[in-house]
Amino acid sequence: MKAAVVRAFDEPPRYQDFPEPDGTGTDELVVDVVAAALHPRVRSQANGSHYTSTGELPMVPGIDGVVRDATGALYYALVEDTNLGTMAQRTIVEKSRTVPLPADTDAAAVAAAINPVMSSWVALRRRIHFEPGSRVLILGATGNAGRMAIQVAKRFGAGEVIGAGRNPQRLAGLPTLGADRTLTFDRLGEAGDVDVVLDYVWGPPSSAGMVDLLTHRNNRNKRLTWIEIGSMAGATAEIASAALRSTRLQIVGSGIGSVARAEFAHEIPEIAAAVVAGEFDIDTQTVPLSEVEAAWTRRPSDDRRLVFVP
Image (cartoon, rainbow, N blue to C red):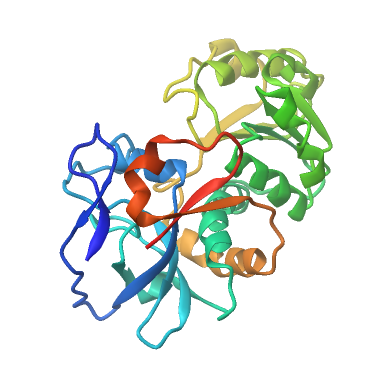
């Protein structure tokens, strides 16, 4: 079969032959892939930089997607911990990690949306006790996951959602998704009294922003939970010791490991149902899998998420 094959971590995947999958486990199912999205998590999988990487090559990237079984039924499937991901004509899925989808499902939209929706959904559901009415600040709100986080926070009853990012033009579009306010990173002090931060950037912007925000906090005894989800601006961030001593700051992470795989799986049916119902706004661009090498290095200039179709 054909697949997007990674043979070196410093090179993009190439459309090549790859061995056919052979599902032999009692919970395994060989399926046709209908659509698989290029999430940031997939890029880090393909270049070996993700913290779950085993270094095994060759590999086919792709952590989720919409698949079809031998009967023609559609499913959303979560696929991890394997060198055969979803960017192939066929793959192996675990039945226990699939969710049935209606026959008329927009496969590209589902493949594109569930992963970014899941990042904030699981963070607020599984990493903290989120109180309705809480004020939420989203760092990196102009990216796909950040845009989804605005909608998720509102869905969960946030009293105020503030979107923060670098680009004022992209920030200007966030109120249509539910953002009550928007801020550039140099103005985070204006969000000093939020209750929860969803951080998709990390690195220097978070280091500087944390100090600015905490300095302008009116009640330093009030808990602030900072949830680290992504690292688009850097894998490490300097944390001022005074930030931890002078305020009631709690820093937690949300991802594979801090959240059990069973907990992710538990949330997927509700997320999938909401996505299928069109409750989340996401823009997609479909690309034939045969064009994976060129598309991989040609990042869209807008907010559309690339979805490969075998």
